[in-house]
Image (cartoon, rainbow, N blue to C red; front, side, top):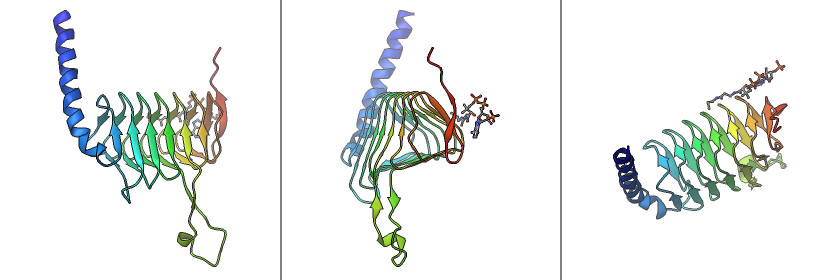
Length: 190
Ligand SMILES: CC(C)(COP(=O)(O)OP(=O)(O)OC[C@H]1O[C@@H](n2cnc3c(N)ncnc32)[C@H](O)[C@@H]1OP(=O)(O)O)[C@@H](O)C(=O)NCCC(=O)NCCS
C-alpha cells in the first residue's frame, strides 16, 4: 500500500511538472493556470479578440474539450475544484468571478456584457456596451444549456436548473429554473 501511495505521489509530481511547462506559454499571454488543473487539448482559454484581459484558474479545476474561456478585455477568475464542461462559453467583458467547487454543465453561456441600444437611429453595434460583471459563488451547480446574464450574482450553494436564463441575482441555497429563472425550491440547510 505504501509503495502504491509512493507511485501515485511520484506520478502526481511528474504530471505537475509537465503541466507547469505546458502552461508556461499561457502565462506569457495573461492566462494563469495552476498545474494541478487540467485543460483539455481542444479547450480554448485565451485573451480574445484583443491581447487584453486576464484569466486565472485555481487548483484541481477541469476545463473540458470544446469549452471556451475568452477575455474580451475583461477578467475571468475561476477558483479551485471547478469544472467547465464541453461547449460552454465563459466571457470576460465586465469581469467574471467563479468561486470554489462550481460545476458548469455543457452548452452554457456566461456573458457579463450587454450592448447599449437606446438610440434607434444608430446601429446597435456602434452604441458601446454596458458591463457590470457576474459572480458565481462557491458550490454552485449550473445545469446544461443555461445562460447567465450581466450583473447577476449567483449565491453560494445554489442550483440553476437545465435550460434556465438567469436575469437576476440568486439568493444563496436557492434552486432556480425557467426563462427567466425563478426560485422553484430552496435547499434546506437544517
Ligand atoms: C434543478 C434540478 C436538479 C431539480 O431537480 P429536482 O429537485 O428533482 O426537482 P423536481 O423535478 O422535483 O422539480 C421541481 C419543479 O421544478 C420544475 N423544474 C425542474 N427542472 C426544471 C427545469 N430545468 N426547467 C423548468 N422547470 C424545471 C419541475 O417541473 C417541477 O415543477 P412542478 O412542481 O410544477 O411539477 C433538475 O431539474 C435539473 O435541472 N438538473 C440539471 C441536470 C443537468 O443539466 N445536468 C448536467 C450534468 S452536470
